[in-house]
Length: 270
Ligand SMILES: Nc1ncnc2c1ncn2[C@@H]1O[C@H](COP(=O)(O)OP(=O)(O)O)[C@@H](O)[C@H]1O
Ligand SMILES: [Mg+2]
Picture 1 (cartoon, rainbow, N blue to C red):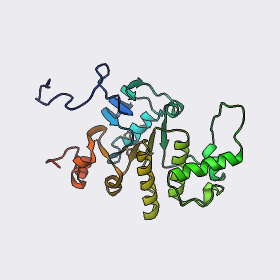
Picture 2: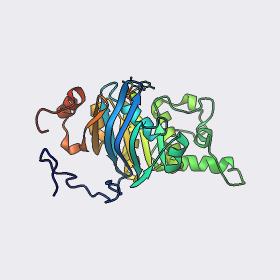
Picture 3: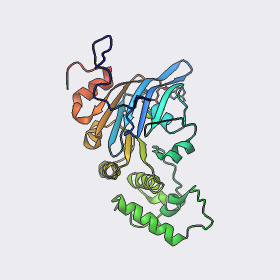
Picture 4: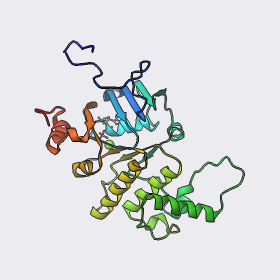
């Protein structure tokens, strides 16, 4: 095995493709991703792997670069430098539409749902069908019901309810169901439970677990470490634009994670 100058093994344990150096079984891999906003370096040489069928929690203090990172993946910002791989293939994502076509869906805090439309209409909003015929209301209603059922979303009484009448947790559920109906392979959520009460938070966490159990990769930003330790399979910690640590959740404790978030290092093994 080759070693770096510091004596650390290089690529220990990684199953890397010889051409790109990334593991092609990963849904998404970032290598050396950097983003400047003028003088501000929001992302510094970020390497991150996001597998399918698992929940990756992205944590870090305010300003650490979490939102900037997911916006790079969502096609909102182009990185200043670095490379992104989707299922082992090098990709450039220039627009949210390109991200969506790959199967990357982002559910933001301020959800892009229309309050004055019902759930079914929201599920099909902006749906670009290339087929000649337009889906009829009955089919749309059935598909909406089925998608919510598949995701074990049981609290919605009628798919003809206006979105304005839904709770925050139910709105998240509709946004996620819309992504799933459009065949999302990676669902990214920025602070999905930040504005939610206890029972709604539980609903959203259950939904996150359901997504992963269906083989979808989930990348979730959260400030709430209780939520993180409840749902995450993997943890990734950002500190001042640098991804300082990532790996299986079993490698982290609450206190080691807090230490990484606040200082960027951990003083002893977790
Ligand atoms: N559009 C922008 N223009 C200038 N600076 C930005 C912009 N977006 C984010 N930043 C800066 O980048 C850094 C990371 O921000 P952000 O990704 O929002 O952090 P987090 O989501 O972890 O709180 C911060 O210093 C922030 O001020
Ligand atoms: Mg943020």
